[in-house]
Image (cartoon, rainbow, N blue to C red; front, side, top):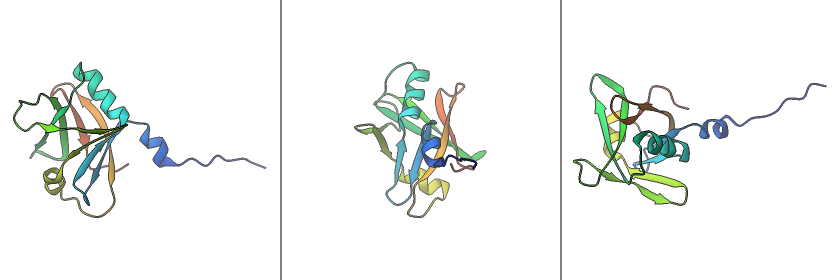
Length: 123
């Protein structure tokens, strides 16, 4: 008899830095790993993020830790381990729709000092 372990890919993927975009409620969620990555690379804790897009790279967006006084700063809503922010404009810009949240991998972009998310590949 050959034993096989059943692994839920969603739980495995959730351990990697990722964000979720929920078109139904217009929210962006940061998992603990993505927040920790951003905090470590940014060099300090942060409470605000700016969202940037580039017309030359329409499937990417950047999450840049920033100060409250920075133009376009959005407050991160923190509840227990959850970190969320309003992202309805981003979701509309990306053309996302539906009732189900979509998860994407997060990487650090040292050139822009921001997390970068590639939306062409859903986790």
